[in-house]
Length: 440
Image 1 (cartoon, rainbow, N blue to C red):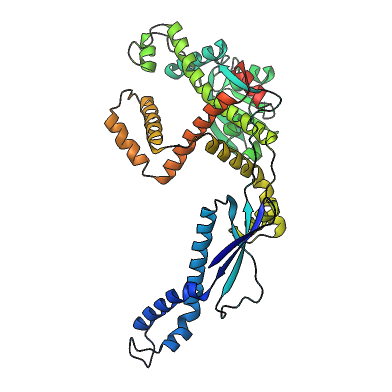
Image 2: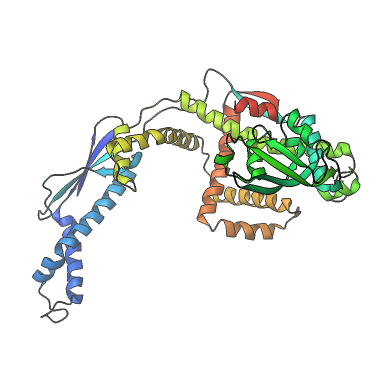
C-alpha cells in the first residue's frame, strides 16, 4: 500500500491511496473460506461447496467491503501520523471507469485544510466591560414586589388607582366573553384610567381596545385572543366589574425577613436592602460576563483574518447533508455557518495555545459547585461532600450532561483568559442603562 499527498495550495490537497492485491487478498480468502464452511447452497453438502461457486456468489461483495475497510483505516492513520488538520472529512473524488475486477486499486480524496493564523485579541478600541449595579429605585421596587407577594388582598366597593379589578370582557361580534383580573397600573392613558377610578362592583364600562393597555400582551390575555387577533385590534368591549380588591402590603418586620432569608439572617430594612443589592449584583455579574464574551467574540472575529477552503466546504456540505442539496443550497448553508466555523477555529487555537483544556477533576469540582448552588436555593446550605460526590458521579455518567457542563467550564476559562489579555475598559451602569446600551 502506498499513500501520497499532492498539495494544491495552502488550504487544499489531494491524498492518493494505492492498494495492491497483496494488501487485501489474504483477508478476502480467509473470509471466503469461512463462508464456504457455513454456506447453504442447494445441491451441495454444508462445507463442500466448490470455492469457485462461493467466490462467484460472495467474492465481489467481500472484496469491496474489505478494501473499503482497509482504505478507511489507512486514510485515518495517515491523517493522524502526518498531523493534518482537516476541516470536515476527506471527500472521495469521482473516478470514471473504476474496475473492481482489477487487482490493484487507486483512490483519491480531496482534503480541506485548516488555515494557519495568529489570533488578534485586541483591536483599535478597548472593549467595554460593564459593571451592572442595582439602583436604589430597583431595590425599592423589589421590596415593593416582595411586600405585594407576602401581603393580602382586601375587598372594597370603589376602585382606586393600582387596585385589582375582577370582571368580564364581552364583545358578541368577536365572540369575546372572558373573565379576568386586571391591575389598574397596566391601563394606558388617563382617559381609560378615569373610567375605572370611582367605578363600583356591578358597573358596566364601555372601552375601546386600541391603546387600552401599556403592553400588547396584556390585551391578548385580558380578551383571551391570539397574538395575531390582538395585533392592531380596534373594537369596543364592555367590562362588567364583579370584584374590586386592593393589595395590602406586608409589613417590613422580622416575620417577613425570616420568611425570606431564615431566622435572624436579616434584622433591619437597611440589611434587607443590602441583601437584595448583593443578590442582584451577583446575577448582574453573569449578564455582564456573558455580554463580555459576546463582545470579545465579535471583536476577535473582526480582527483575525484568514481564508477558508470555501469551495471544498461547500462540496462537503452538499455531500454530507441529511437531505440532497443543490450547489446553490450548499453555498447558502456554508455562508450561514461560516462565521461560526471561523470562531470555532479561533477558539480552538486559543484553547490549545494557552493550555485551557478541561480535566476530569476540574469538571467534577465544577459539577459539585453547580450542585451546591442548586441545593442552596432549596435551603440546603451545607451538604456533605459524600453526597455531592454521589450526585456528581450520576450526572457525569450522562454524556450529554458532561458535554453541557464542559462547555460551561470552558466558557469560564475563556472568560478568565479574556479578562487578563484583552484590552478592557470598565463602565459602571444601572441595569436599565445596560439594557438600553446593549440592546439599542
